[in-house]
Length: 297
Ligand code: G1P
Image 1: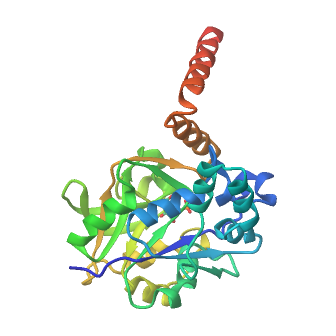
Image 2: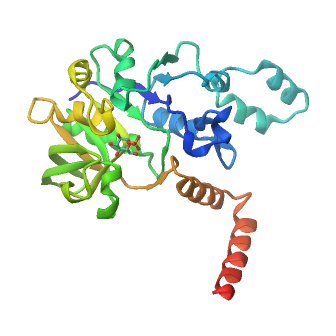
């Protein structure tokens, strides 16, 4: 049975330029789907999967993230005084235990692989998870929890995977499948952002990983790959055929690409429709405007 996964890396150093001007002063990960920051969804998913240590790889301008996870005694006192217990509970659920969260700075934007490598000393010689908060996954059982359960059977390395339209494959890491076992596939190759006609399949890597520490060893040596960046995909691929083989996991759930405006808006609507306090009004509004849209056609 493989070792338990208790540590997760959250790479959050990106500039978020696609969301300028908002991201001029607000880290992208603090932007909200309804009323919860993107990063809160990632933390909740990690917790559900049994993660106990949370490692954020940050950069300049991300200090709002540290404040977000800190206790806010003044606000808590105010809510307590006013008897707003529900809000107090909501607030307290965002606090992290002392020592459970660590921040490491990535000083230069050298790619996702490099960001993960920056956390190597905090990982040591244990398997670890990586969660990209841009990829938000709505699922009955949280995606990383599904993966932890599958990983207990396979060990090695596991990446979340999803079929994408073939013309979109070049935006992702793409798997070359050796054996398809349904939800789990074994992998004989991985290519980061392949050219349109060179993708080995349309099974794309989504931002959830359970990795063996050997990937960190590969990252020590790996040269820059696609886009001139040090790619996590290349370091994982270096483990193929070793005792830490690589598996793709087709998760059950809906993934939103919150790194894009369209994906972010879709996620906002989907999460709002899932809320009892918002569903009816929003559904009515959406049906009204879609009628207006149809009339205009
Ligand atoms: C990253 C990874 C890529 C993966 C994608 C999933 O790319 O490098 O392999 O498919 O996340 O969202 P990025 O979207 O950061 O360019």
